[in-house]
Amino acid sequence: MLTAVIFIAILGVLIFVHELGHFVTARRNGVKVDEFGFGFPPRLGGFFRDEKTGKYKFVWGNKDIQSKNTLYSINWIPLGGFVKIKGADTIESGDDSFVEKKAWPRIKILAAGVVMNFVFAWFLISLALIIGSPESISDNMNAPDAKIQITEVSVGSPAEQAGIKVGDEILNDNTQATFGNIEDVQNYIKANKGTEISFNVLRGTEIVEVKVVPRENAPDQQGAIGVGLARTMLVKYPVHQALWNGAVAVCNLTLMILLALGGIIMSLFAGHGVGAEVSGPIGIAILTKQVATLGFVYILQFAAMLSINLAIINALPIPALDGGRILFILIEKIKGSPVTQKTEQMFHTVGFMLLILLMVIVTLRDVVKIIK
Figure 1 (tube, rainbow, N blue to C red):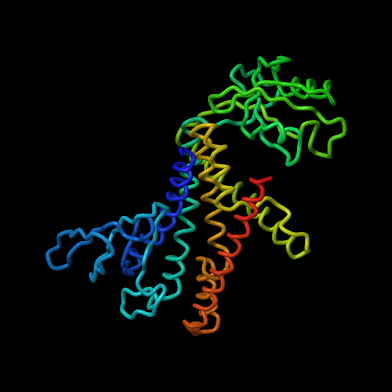
Figure 2: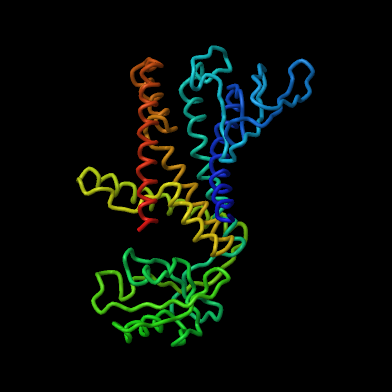
């Protein structure tokens, strides 16, 4: 239940922040916003400023509101939010209509959601660095509070079969050995290839004993049990340094995701399939459960990673996404006249249907993984 709450909260906040970017930028560029909603319809209620009295009026349910001012609504489905911008999806005349604005204001409004997700990721990572974030240190560094943590678990490896999770902390005082650093762990595993070993890990607040048989002949780059190890310690930064390091981290993560996305696209064109792990809502929910056991700082970092992913995906020039809508504005500037509304709407509809199909396929893959 807690995992579901955390998952909904993260997803909801990320979408809400994205839509908040569209809302603020539209208002600053003189475009009317008919409704700015928290959550998705049906509407529970909302309020708006009555232009006659200048006072705020509250309304309940899905009552149709005719007002020159924005309706701020609360909706029943708590998954983010939405913004209804005048003229964004339909032809509406007037100086305050999106479609009547020049190209640059429209591009700014559409790009604002992406920018907000990047800014929010920066805020989350910076906050994690201020609170105290785990960082890798060398094996020979004198750090009494250092931890030995699992950073990677290879698919199909003995570690995965034994239930070892990313983020598990290998305790110094273990069932069969004492570990002071990564080299001690590696030597213990190497000395017991082909024999069952056991050691204790700290997972959240729970101490778990894991049993695993190291492979005598392991695949390249995997090791005997198929884990990645890192020696980490909690590091706190002052605000100014946290903000700088947070910005650097966002840039590095963005580059990493773009390279991974490029690899997926190249693999598809080469006929090799996806060639990487792609998760849908179910897969992300499972990752949320794993991250939630590690602590609040890890949740912040995970939410930041999702925010960057959301920004990059929305920036892609795919119909129905913000990047796709910006692409049509650029085409309009190049050809000197807008693409007909019917043609653009057809592309966006097809793009939306393909995205839904992709989501269904990825979700089915997640379900199959769970069943296996």
